[in-house]
Length: 71
Image 1 (cartoon, one colour):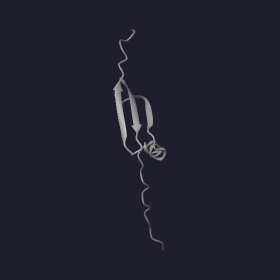
Image 2 (image 1 turned 90 degrees about the vertical axis):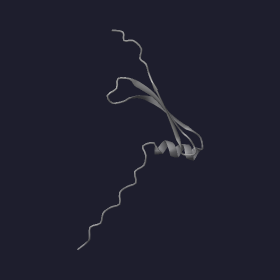
Image 3 (image 1 turned 180 degrees about the vertical axis):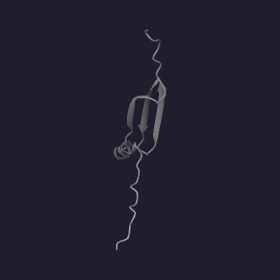
Image 4 (image 1 turned 45 degrees about the vertical axis):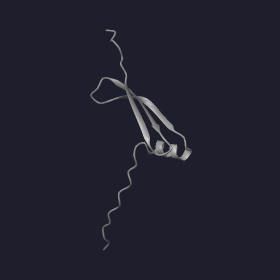
């Protein structure tokens, strides 16, 4: 009779691990930019994340003002 063995859980990497590792490996900042709309909000935001070669990341958010509606 064989015993039951629990498999150790796979390590969880942060979603941005590839950007962080690329910045470290290439020894230069890696920039990711885009637009996001948060759940429950009708205002879009611009975001910019800079991954530094030392493993840190700096994120900036800027709310976009769409201006008056053309109804």
